[in-house]
Length: 203
Image (cartoon, rainbow, N blue to C red; front, side):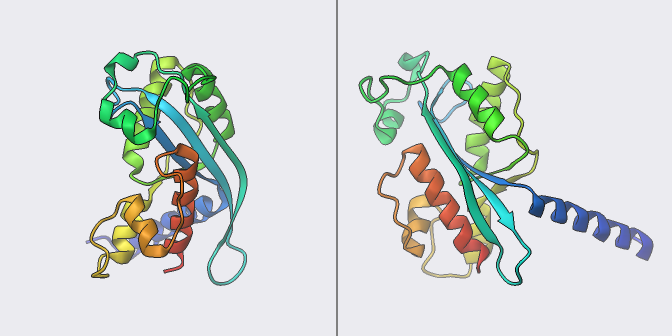
């Protein structure tokens, strides 16, 4: 059992980490991909909403959007795509006319998200594709190492709510009355994730 001094030191460290996180921007991220496996599938679309936090007011924190960005990414191996994934995200050659190279998209994303904490719905999925792409193309990931997951947040906050049995973004948006008219478009899902995060933070 830890002694009192160790316990106090641990609490102080946790307090400093929490305080530092509150001073950082949050960057809500969503990706659309050609499948579910980052080892063989590709990014098709990347989007983020960067948000400043203000904890100076008593009560719930205030979150302010400072920038939004999205880009369709030109696939290099579309023949390896999962047709079901392409149907979900609406990929067609025509719709992706003018899409940017993955290297260019990653460099912009890296610069614009520097120092921010990544937040996503099922953050492990989006992070796995981004981490793989960063490594493959030699682009640095400049986001903070902490990551937040709105699926985990929703489970922690809503596990006793009998009407909530699924934790997909669509189901949680329905639960909170969040309108997402362009689901499975990266920027629209990112905005919905941010709104979901705000709702969960108030519970």
